[in-house]
Image (tube, rainbow, N blue to C red; front, top):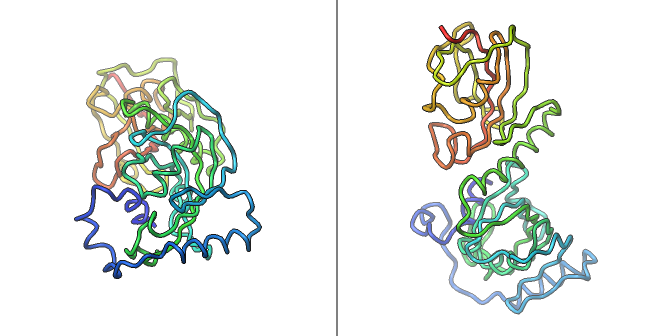
Length: 300
């Protein structure tokens, strides 16, 4: 399923893909077959409100969203959820199963998406029925057979001009990832700072003082991804000391300054306050990070 998401953004990765997908079938025009398959699927499922684009793409606007003066264009970063299936219902990809929205740019996507996304607003929900020539064509892709008609359900959360900063785009994406994480874990007691950091006291500390920037700190901690996979931490019963400075990720620098001596806290850190677009060890690029930290001592 992970590979399917990667290949949705296919335009600039041709050579890398060559070793990962099946040999292409001979080029055959399946447009008439695909038209019949889509029409039959719509009829059998009682779908009467589908619009046919001149390309052969069919789509329904399930929720119109909020109209605005701007619109999605070929180079707009788009934050969205989607689910991809074959017409028989086989699921091959889902952003919600990954527990994080996708951030995609239309010009890098399959043609069916390039056509559909500019038709949508913020908050739009739509279903696409993509004939094979607007999808992956005669390439077999993971569990997707060659020449497959594809069905996508999508929800546009937000979109931005091509000049939008990383922080602007991924603050929105991270906020949705964190919302889904909190909902899954049934966590309702986080404090959200202006930066987007979520801070949660797990065990109260003592006193009224907090560490300041450039203080020495002694901590025990664990770091994990939203799927609970641990990527770093101190061993049980052990701790580590270092300087709380700007060499740390911003989420740590901000969050630890809110803690008291002896406090245990959870920091849920959006990607702009973490490693941003950089993959680091087992941490994928653009990851939201969860740290549980015990502040043993500071200012020594």
